[in-house]
Image (cartoon, rainbow, N blue to C red; front, side, top):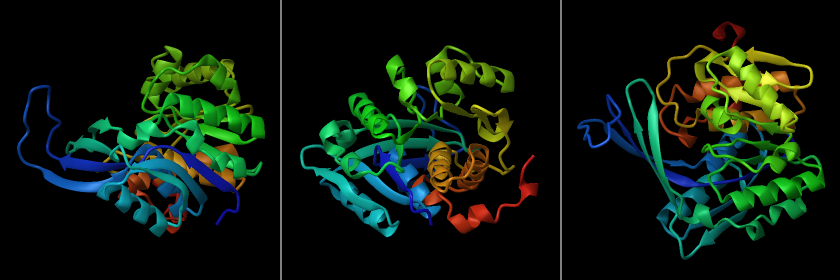
Length: 308
């Protein structure tokens, strides 16, 4: 267990999932399939991933006063997450995500943010108590004004900020120099840089552009191909274990949560990416979001031969 705190600020949703042979086209109804519900939300997913992997996690979020919010709080407690800064909104429902998954594990997702959209800067009082070693992990399923506030306040306190820029959107240019690390996937990297990422060479160009904007370190996640790391002393594609994907819904969230844990343990950045890739690879072999997050013993057991 690491003693460096990981402060996750983000969303909490309930995922309603249908797994069927194919994803429906616009106007199409696809019959058959299996329905299940899972706790989700990018922030909550990352918090659970980090906690299961040994992180000391505090979660900042907002949920509704409905059954979904009650279940979420109970789940966080069971995972060992500090929920002192998860607030309950009596006026807005908890966030909900509708997810379709096909037989190849590909998905499409629609999200009704609910209380997530009401998470304001004043709700992030946890920053006041954070010490200088705290790692802050953010996503973009909460209001951008709150994300900006957290980044600026964290930078002023000297905290390392990891921004997972998902769901994809453009960002104010003056935020980039305040980030220790940014972790887009190929689509998000293209939105941020205008460069279409299709291979290692284009990933390197996109990562260099993000560094030119001021970000200290860049990781572009590229699915089964691995993760491209661009830092002061490294610029390479780091492979991930070879697995058969069942559901890729929260692979990026698992990667980011695991990455935060490795950095909190003072692992070198390259080793942290390798560790995060192992966690993400395990997660895609299982259905669901938080339910798919692996435990530390599972990640540590992954041998070198699992990689390409």
